[in-house]
Amino acid sequence: MKLVIVLLLSAGLLVSACTAFPAPSEADIQTAVAETLRALPTPTAFGALTPAPSPTATPTSAPTETPTPLQPSPTATSLGLATATATLLLRQEFAEARIYRVGLLVSGQFLVTLLLSGQPQENYRADVNGEVFKCQVLAQYPDRLYCTGPALPAGKTAVIRVYPQEGEELVFRSDFFVPLPPSSTPTAVNKRATSTLTYRNKP
Image (cartoon, rainbow, N blue to C red; front, side, top):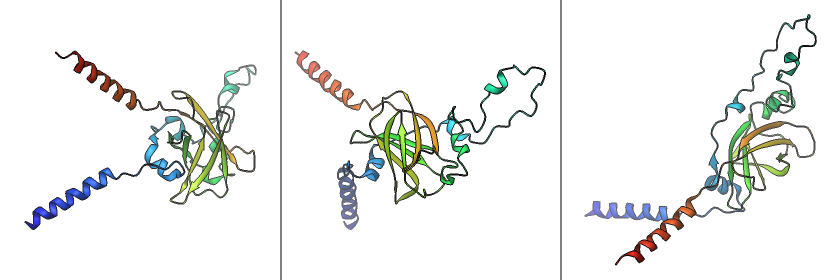
């Protein structure tokens, strides 16, 4: 009898825990991160920050040859692929920084999370496709930089640039794909409509 009572109490606790799931607060970024983020697949372009070996010999007989000067170098900021490497000595926390997650918050704002090499020593801001994003660090995750701003066009590539709060020095640049929003709501409406039509057609 005692075993049955214990099992019933345990089942009741599990049901209450499942039904009492708190709704995410729009004012609390930490809750929004936990409830609304969609994970971004590990990008191959972000991981390779090791400088590529530069050519050791350049033919002197063909000074007008164009392929050699057009090859990207590890310090070229115009291509945006090795910007983090070029600023290693200036911002150590961005030495191996990468985009960790992106997602749309309940408030309608877009969130870009950067995973840093260490805790930031100053405040930063971001520019995403020309839009201003505010960046902050949560006490629970001191090695992550959370940047929020206006919603971005889904299904397209965006570029994020990070600067010191009071400066114009570029410390990080990378591109990422903006995921498509979930389509669970239209599916549910279609199911209800189909069910109603089936009921009306019954004799």
